Image 1: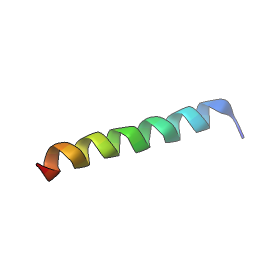
Image 2: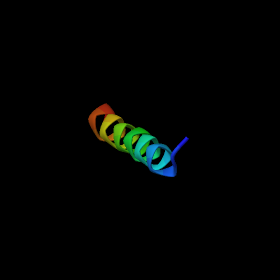
Image 3: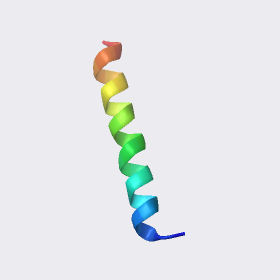
Length: 25
């Protein structure tokens, strides 16, 4: 697996968590 794919998936998960947290409040 390419490291760029792992970084992209990691950033996507973090971004979704941040958006979900801000909208959860």
